[in-house]
Image (cartoon, rainbow, N blue to C red; front, side):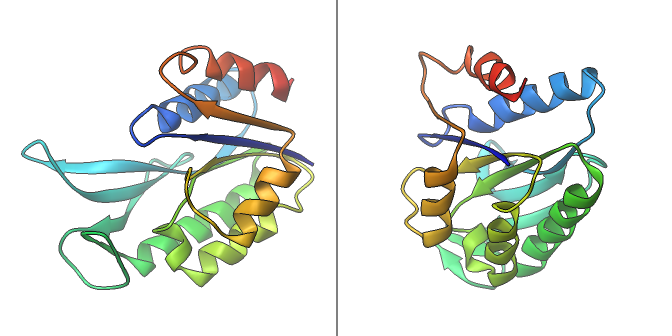
Length: 171
């Protein structure tokens, strides 16, 4: 079991770090699966977030300012989008050498299925890279922090070196 935790302030580049790691691992011939979360913007204004499948590039809504579902701030969490992410993570667990999950955060944790999947990933015998929301308090998050083989807090000073640091630890 190898758990790698990436955390940091909003907008510091956590997703960019894990995307660079994923690309390098793919270039090395490893199969990388899972999901990342990306901002959705309209007219340069953030209107939500979406999940992107790392294998197929398929997308599903995580949250939006218009809609229904559990609310986090001004966003409504799309539970169907969370189910999409869980399905993609389960496929990655079966088929991939390395699993990436961005992010374990308050929006994603509105889905019981997502929380269950995150918990299941703690027991895998393959590398799991997770982006963890810096302030989220949850027993599953506590387990990731406790079991992490490597935890990096991304900031403006280390974000360019962070992919290499993660790759060195992955071997």
